[in-house]
Image 1 (cartoon, rainbow, N blue to C red):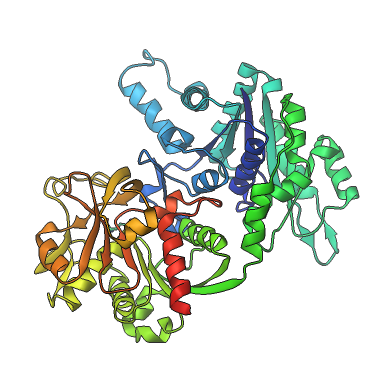
Image 2: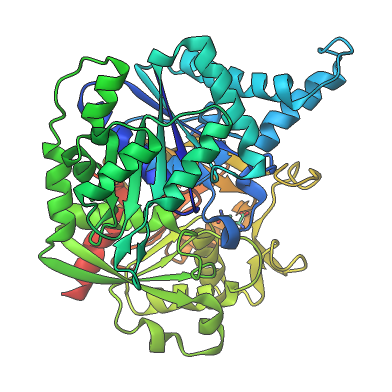
Length: 533
Ligand code: GLN
């Protein structure tokens, strides 16, 4: 088994996750079994409690692990279905060590960053290789080399190399080669300094992936090679991509990244045939049609807060040969204004997940607009709860209908906590997380979209549809299109008298892949195209 560590230098936001995932794609296309892992230096035990404004979306895995959005890149770019072990934060590492200390496992020794924390980090790397056997494990280290909190991870890698042998480990350092306008030049100094930082800890990069706005001329590559002590063919250009991030693996293949990796690690594997990926990219960049979709949300300023939703829309668009033009509609703005002002020219309305009351009344107005004007609607998680509240208020005339998340005293709590859930305390304690099965009702649009009677989708929510209202809602045309196998939880709803109005309690956006768009997103975009005509 071979190990690749991906580190980042100079600044954050260089697209390390994307670079790691792209390398994963290339190696998989060479027929290798690849597993991806993220080690994050922050102290939060999981990003589940982090504000999407700060950290982007919380990505949820099959087993319910809440993690960084880079895990989303990994799942979209490779065939892996990841789980808790694929992601660790310093918070989790320290938590394990401190728990062991409390249990007396260290036999009274002084518990220290070295060796206890570093041992726990190494244990997590090795354990993943056992849990998900593979040819290559790619581990991305969050943060930037030089950060104080990242040091234990780098020290762990240094020790790890001693344990498994230099020939089995490769370090790819993603760095920035900035263009200084006044000088008209690309500058290598920041990279040199960042590599010097790596060396201080005893690590030496094998590959430099140089993020740059411009082409990296040979003389700059040579300079980097000389000063950073990396063979010239291992100085890889990672130029900004204008059209689609899915082009990254193709460009890196042109730069021979996978070739250099295989050579350095002594891996014998056929050249990657990227035909399927190339065809997907061509469809993304040369669509014949175009469709405008509104996303009515409240974390829109943070460009990564709805990452997986954007990507799922793109995958579905590519399959239907159409470009998705996204109209970001601030839910709070809709609260004050006529929704038609913002929604009259869109062919589909999507209400994503969310927590807290802010913006919910605006989302309800959007759902009402979609229902009354026959605009295709896709509600995800909170988006289903919103659709339920809207229908209860405006079709059944249940004034004050709401979710108890937003109004504890609502006379019609159509969305509520289940008994038993109510007593749980502590952040994250009563969340329904991870994959749960849904049984789909015959003859529904959902069945048309999915084509199978049972599906498995990922969840991340606390509140549920209140079954006390089921009969009257159904009688008025609100179809319960999918439930848990026992029938106690409502998972999927649709409107009988509407061309395409579907909403689910789960997050389909976590299971869409470039060449396998998710059934609901595909159905939604198909309906939007129809509406547009
Ligand atoms: N806030 C809602 C709940 O907890 C919806 C969650 C979500 O959209 N992910 O049930």
